[in-house]
Image 1 (cartoon, rainbow, N blue to C red):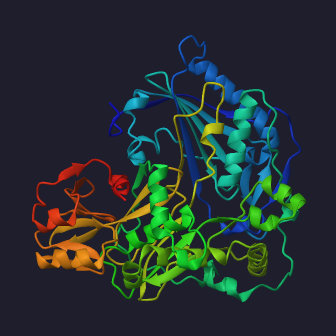
Image 2 (cartoon, helix red, strand yellow; image 1 turned 180 degrees about the horizontal axis):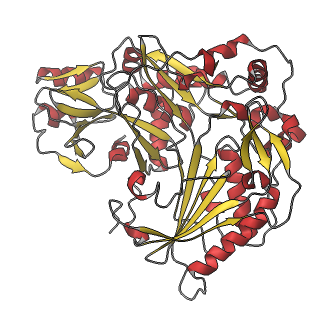
Image 3 (cartoon, helix red, strand yellow; image 1 turned 30 degrees about the vertical axis):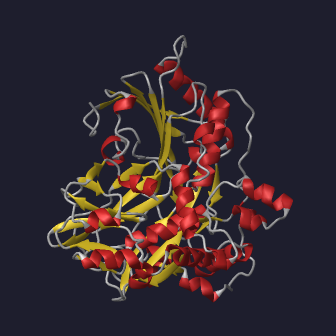
Length: 527
């Protein structure tokens, strides 16, 4: 039971956990960087195996540990015990009143080993990850049939970014084990203040936009913004291989894993029926703490403990046909250029000034904005979870077997006409959008990377390519050496994966009897 979400979750108790010590009620203003976040929630969950044989821990005792530690942690992390309100000019503000955190206890009639994490839409969200109804943070502890435990939280992104949430999770676990806090949060808004009130760098107008300047929304299909979540685990050596493929010795620097993987995703997004002249955008979330520290030891120490949002989302844009035709290394270099514009102290200080000049008008990152331009294609955002502290969230019964951030409300993708996207959450928290296209009644998912010689071999036997993407006239699909893969869908989202080891096998037309793969991202292992 439970492989497809066919299990029941019964809530046994709901209560509010407040900070163990009283506090003076006060208002905490949103920083200029906080104000760039719309009202949205982010979830995180951790799966724990049943405590080892001989342990006296029960679900009840573990919940007691969680609640007690939560009440202690909220003394320092009082922002999570407050409520979001509006100030006199309509801007969001945090009321620190120790309202507390909604804490839910539940039981799920499923074993941990039977819990299908592949499809979190069915098994995690709304069942094991709670929907926040009030306050800033909501927590759910769920006992599993096997004695395992799932601890999940949902928090308001306007109050905390992933870095801040990670700080809290680690501190919560440290409190549970009676350890001193390794890092105390700082709410010093004076660290993020404008330098030149009334003035800003006009280049930021290309990256951020006031909400009032947005064009009216276009008429879209009811399913146009429907998101599908998937979780995949990608081994380190596979990412290392992808990184080596993206490296270009001529540029004199090593491509990072984030740059290489983001470049790969960018090519995937345009790999289908996106018209060649359409502009495709890709943004990357950048944490500004190290940048604002700018090498100053004292300032860096302060920024490392800063609780709130310190994010920017630079983006690049290229024509779809250019992204398809160019090699992975060229796209990775484009990603690097995009990031270069936002990994400096000056960028974040300019952004703070930009927000100040537009207050109280709400604003957002421009990549999230719909465009009225006819040449606008798909857009997507990559958020890396490389610093996700899964191994440090140990409440006293071991480290989690699985820990993931749920980005269902965080990741957003604008799609052009005819585009349907699927989101995949990869090991480490990266996100990827799959690309589906229609070709002769058959739906295909395609990635790119075949050399000219192989293109000629395939064309000689009636298998044609378009911008390096294979189209088989017989509607068959194939894996052609490395690093090209093609996937056919046997149903709307029911994927069948077929592969071959060489171009020669495909050229021999022996493509209808290829072996079926079970996982989409397994193609990386062939790189």
